[in-house]
Image 1 (cartoon, rainbow, N blue to C red):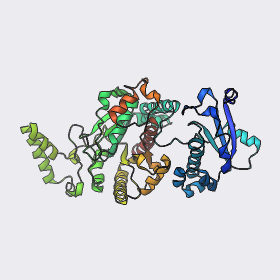
Image 2 (spheres, one colour):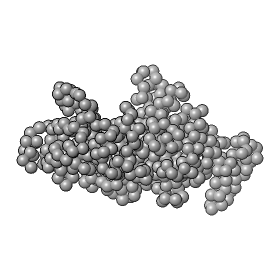
Image 3 (cartoon, one colour):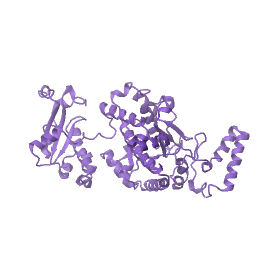
Length: 467
């Protein structure tokens, strides 16, 4: 406690620690001013930067707590890329936060052995290592939350021409592609509409508008029955980013739906006034060519039946008349990028993984001629093995469904909220706490920010190909 007045005088306190097992039972991991009922930097104490020297994989495994040790992947630790970074973050979180009592926000720096005092000082003053990782389910710190929220709003308000620097190309893109248009598909209860609801909340949409993104209960039918188009701005004219929410896919996932039904959507052939149907299930509706005379005649007679009789009979006829291949593609409904929302699947559930892998492969293949890139949004990350970081779960899932890690964005739900969730935040309709009660799940802006940036980069490839 005598250290607190001294520590308050400095903007940053640096501790250099050799990564030997016995060293973690003493300073800096037992400094009282840095813990006070979990409050970050209690009593105004300075931020702490910890330089961990000579942390090899053997020492990591020896020192880490059992929970983290079980999830430790040695090949990741021995790599020079993201795997080493993730292993070090897990190690730092285990010994510094869980075991050592330091608070979230402490910065840990991975330092090789043999550096001079000058080099150590430079790493301390300008640390290149980010803060120790946030445990899955933990919320962002208030400052990080507001930073990501502001960045997400900026991304949603920018338009496609902002991706280019050449004046002539910016002008051409502004005319031909005035807004980003992103289609979203996924099984019912995968988290598709919940994701869009939170995106709409952070974009400033009012409660009535957000209610259009209704969520299906686990295992239930999709609440979304029509194609829903919604710009991510309260005033639609100001929306630079438009999403298209679709009816939940019918289980089990069928590759023929990806090759037909999703293609018609991406081409802009499905209108927003007619109840959707996922054609292609079992090949029943797609064996005939789209220009088949008998199919055309059947669709025409059903449409006439709807006009003549109306009412309840009209609905049945309207469903039968669903024939998007007969519609002209609409530029206003054409997808520039596609997001497939999928729950995390445990590696041992190989039947489901095989089904998802086949569907994703069919989606990617069918989108190539259109120039549309696919991004997978992984939800229900809490089902991933305990002790793995979100990035490790993402990489494992990407490998299991045979796509690149850069094609998967994790959208973990947050298990609890910080006090600012009860406050009114400027530009948002309702508090976070109220939205959690309505939506049933809490999704923070950082994952959505990564998703938006990913699909905007994918959209750029679409513009390059179609200009």
